[in-house]
Image: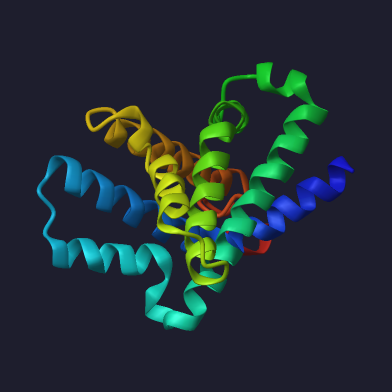
Length: 188
């Protein structure tokens, strides 16, 4: 089980890097821009279009949200499965792998809530004809409105930065940012 979780996690991560990165940055940019920087409506709409995948066309928006959301839930599930299978590793030496594991465990619940409510909002609106009251509740949870006007951007910032840190540390573990050691034939 743990080997399958690790392999699935490693296979999903590179495929989902750009969509998750785009969704995270635009979601944070929209909320923080509106809350702290007076983001214009036109720029805000453009950021939401990127956040939801509207550039793919209206029929594909819910499918895009579903696939990115399920992919992120898959990464979260397989990552937590590995953390639960090896709880002692969270106490291992303090390096990027340790930080990745610890942050995944700490941020799992807010990320899970944010992903599920974002998916529920978009899919409920597009496929299930949910009423405005139900849709509004999902969006309020998704963007942390339940914390009030002052704390809402801090919630979005915390979830977004956690997700970005997980992406960065995860890719560091895959060795994509490491210098390649020259082979004997290249050394001359």
